[in-house]
Image: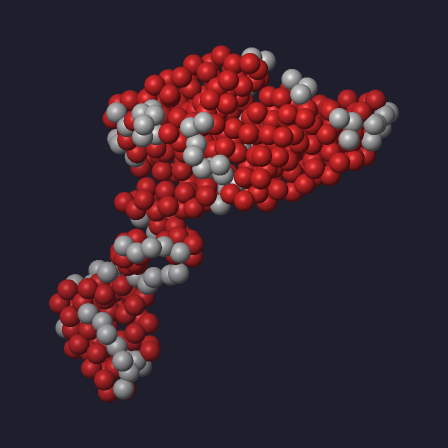
Length: 422
């Protein structure tokens, strides 16, 4: 969408109404002055604008053309028109097309006053559609415009951290989340503070530092009013129990999770899907495979109906159980199914987790072509996330594989690509 500047509007109207420049002498200014206004070399005085509006409206009436203009419309700049248009749009519910249009206008016309509001709407839309790389870019652009507003900075830093979590870059995520927490303390924003603490805990868990993860999740739980924030409290307890599972503290984790089940009246509550999935993982790790499948099936029942995004997690865990039972064909089908679901949802973590299970399987059976294909897919995904550190790790695996198989050409190719990262 393009708006016209003052001179462009005058020139366009003049040509549409078949008026020569010299016919505008009635405004009290020369043809040369009108020309300079049209070319953006002179500003349009109000009294001249008023005369022009009269001339244009009169000519339109003579030609039987409907024309509704006034001095304000004629004198307003393209940037001012764009801002007015955006502000009017922001008063109403926005469609995805509206969001795209006003984002483009704010960017093209550099409407700084609207950047925080419009970019946040755009970033939120991208995040909801799981386009985390693009969402991150828009959230980041907001920072310069909210430098003196700690409450807004806290919110944006939290969003930046969440984007980085979804992009599997937990070190960077922690940096943004710590800033989120610091700014939320300044303004005593309890909700953002809690969200920051939870996400920091999640980062530490993903980085296999369960001790620090539990510390932060305990800080989060202290801020929860269990009588009001039941679901938030339950989510934190589930994360904490998963830390205990990773620490092989199975008994304590099982007690926490079983106790949590009793807090839900609805047998199909979405959070029960998380609890059953965690119990499935717990019993899988304990090699109580029948119990594991029982809970994973319960999780699957809820998630296929209410939580498609996390369904891939349960499907992949079930595949892992099948691998332990030496049911490799069934496991392979479930692994591929879990990857398909994760890809549809842009769930990068479980796409990669699925690839890693396939990696182990193909390595065990020396299926090198399939293994290379998986590695290249992983690199492609890490590159998309701008996660060069993880991409480099995969190139190192490819170098080792091509060395083991004595494939010198592939070795040179992978070495060249790895060097580009370094």
